[in-house]
Image 1 (cartoon, helix red, strand yellow):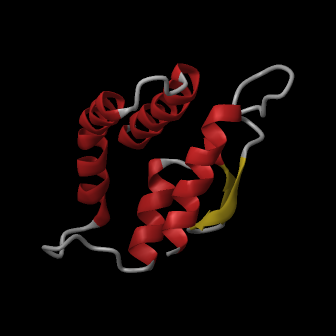
Image 2: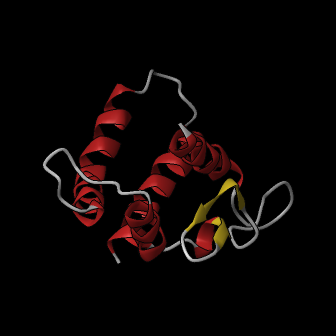
Length: 116
């Protein structure tokens, strides 16, 4: 369940990330739990694809067919745009647009960084 905490940390931070009063610089945002590969990585902006893949390899994460985690990550990246569109379509009327944009835009940005 520790991966859930990492995802929750990221999604919870998106609405307050930015520059200016009441905002948290994206360069200072830290995870509640580190992504551990060769060393611990706490800052959200510093965590790269290789860190997630290294951690997956370290803990033996494979997909349902026994393939390595890079295929899982590639699939996640490929599905993100459709997931963002589906969530936007299901938001209730009156849902704060700025909140939706920050969370869903942050999610797409994270997927784009995972693709790199």
